[in-house]
Length: 114
Image (cartoon, rainbow, N blue to C red; front, top):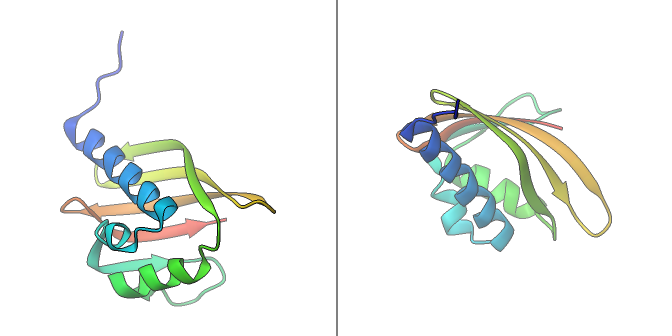
């Protein structure tokens, strides 16, 4: 029996694709458009989240280097998306998982683990 996916799950997967494509193209305006104005971005080894679209984008822009993001698995359950992926540069390859909470078609909260 084929797996039926909901239109909301398809929209969430397309958002993840746009988000990663914008990062990889260094299109910071398109990247920022994936986030809610008041997005909260939590990272390992950091007690307080970055708050706001500008803070999230600036942090990632400053640390992007020549790295590329890819998603190996995307799981959608309602407004929560879990992405398993990798960050690759010519010198290294690292794996990550992020939990995204969506609101009105944008990322409202991101918790990144690596």
